[in-house]
Image (cartoon, rainbow, N blue to C red; front, side):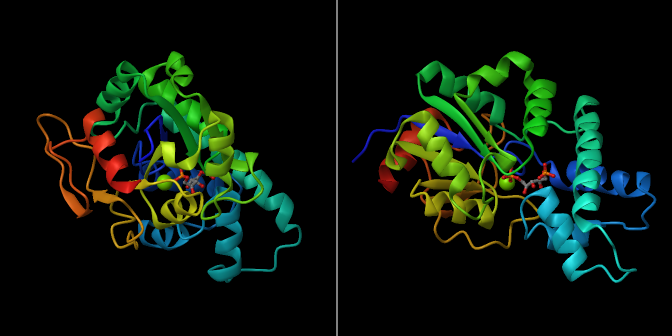
Length: 254
Ligand code: XBP
Ligand code: MG
């Protein structure tokens, strides 16, 4: 059995429920600013979340849902729209529109006190991670993560394993000494392909996803006054995830 050394966190959907009221709103504001009559409602956005990466998601929308006039320079449109969307998303986070999910701050504090290491592996744009951590925890919290692997730093986004492989390389740790927290099937496929045991905290957009490869599936991390629920896989002794729980889940998985 290997020893747990580091916890790697996904961002969107895991640390914070950023998709419906954050990214989706930012995309729609960018479309308006660009004079486009596109509108991604909650249901359509849920379908578009099948593709990770904002630029890739716009391309997926154009290829599979868009019925309008022919677009001449798609590459420029996608990169300009996405850059604009990122400005809107960062502005939303700076207005503290979105907070962290239950248990995230508490578990960060417990992990840091325990000496376990922390990292982030996300598909989102690096500026978005900086804005979320800074707006919720303060800029100094960025140093809590030995590696913040984000967005285009790797050639292939989730569900490819690239971002987790990159994170392991930066941590200089083998996969079996880490534990991943994710929220989606794409994230689970990615971490699993990198051979890292993965725990899911699902959300409304991902609750129907296939999590059969996960060590465990919870509704959220829980708090002492807000018990979580183990929906599949291994449960832990307490009604919320603590560092002891992390060691329990890791030892069951390796
Ligand atoms: C979620 C994603 C991201 C965001 C949008 O990333 O797939 O693409 O939806 O952010 P994760 P960008 O769950 O891996 O944190 O527009 O910056 O890509
Ligand atoms: Mg996610």
